[in-house]
Image (cartoon, rainbow, N blue to C red; front, side, top):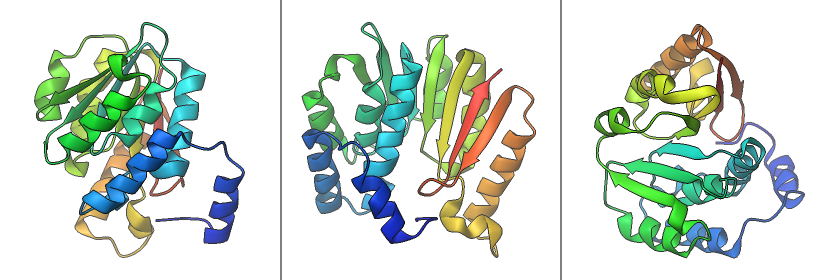
Length: 210
């Protein structure tokens, strides 16, 4: 889903720093080998996540939802020398893809894939998380945030994907759009964070822990 003119989006992409050859090939393979390639963060969102990570320079990143590993590789580009990224994936359907491409990443030693339900994995994570990216089961977004916030450092940044749900949240809402609207409303009223909802791709909500 694009919320700006397609040609303008293409212009923005053309005028942005290229992704690595590894990411270009990973995006290609995701389209060739998966049933839902639109789930990938892709070039523009990937460059945004990379830029945020490089500005933040996190030591500890957590990602909920690995898919083929594209966002994890982008986020890892900003890790400090001793940094690490833990990415949590429920389904092993595409583990051959993300394990292969993460294994080719310059930050491969810093990226750890944890398989299982994030609701069970998050309570066992260490404290002091600097950056979080959430792109998994939409009905559990609020629970993810509630579990992660106490583990985040002050000034930690959390980003949630798909929060505009194809633009349906301002139309006649589907059940999933209603779920995202409820999440957006809850985040907007959450006193522990400052939030900003960006119309990038399918909607990105940024939450800064106070």
